[in-house]
Image 1 (cartoon, helix red, strand yellow):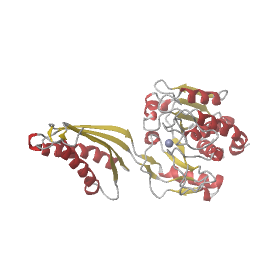
Image 2 (cartoon, rainbow, N blue to C red):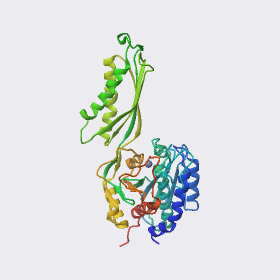
Image 3 (spheres, rainbow, N blue to C red):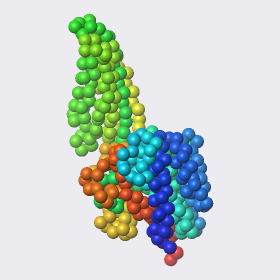
Image 4 (cartoon, rainbow, N blue to C red):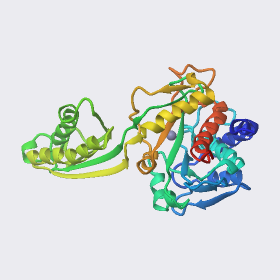
Length: 402
Ligand SMILES: [Zn+2]
């Protein structure tokens, strides 16, 4: 039986697993029920399993039994966490616990279990090892970082030679379309927090106080000017100030003012530049106003960069398995961010999108990932699992004896 035939034969189990996981969503780095259900799904497979110490991750290693001198290692990633959203999808298997798999990570787990089962079944055709990375805390809490600290990349005895992850979308492309691009696919993400301290006073006599509010206003305006004046239009950044806080009454000059924001970049160079420029910009304005500045930079995810050859290879494998019409090439990166970027910093690989737009929705208008109304069509699980398993199996195919 081929990998695809085998996965087709277990597809009802994978879809049932996805729906069960959908009903027990957990948020963040500690996902005990999700981890327990996955361990049950992997039970009996010839896998070396390591559980996370700081987080509820699962790392499973499959040792291929085909002979080969080189014995590469490949890594497949599936994230496990949900979002703090009250589900309003109307699905019969909707969650009722106040959290929601609104980013499709329940499908990612099901397709990684499917790939693991298929590769275990075909382990005699693998001349190398596979690492299955089940990762909590993708949604902004950097679960991948903890797994790297605990030795994820060395678990098979050799660093991965290739890595892949699939992410489902509920919209954008027709259902079943795989998509990616060479090079940068997602932005970096960083947070900044600013606190300005002046001297409070009466609103009628600002000259007797030191007003932090105009300093804050100038900092926010200057930030947006910096985006266009200091950065190339061909290597842009995105900056948003999303929280602003100052004062308690209309006629009181507050003692402090604060604001928080996020910045995204599409290259390490642009990211390094804004990391350097932003605090200097704020410090200069603070000095001009005579106020005190506290600036905090909270590092989140690096830029997600696909290996060019790996992205082209994915397009070829999709075309061969499912037909060329099932692959679409992104015209531009997304300004979202992903901690799979940390894996792609260590191993050449590819982050792949997969549309799971429901059949009754238009991909142009369907509610998108992270919406309380979002729905994903789990008929894509089998093909997603098959693609991951095929990419791994092809990389680990024994060299042909001539
Ligand atoms: Zn996601």
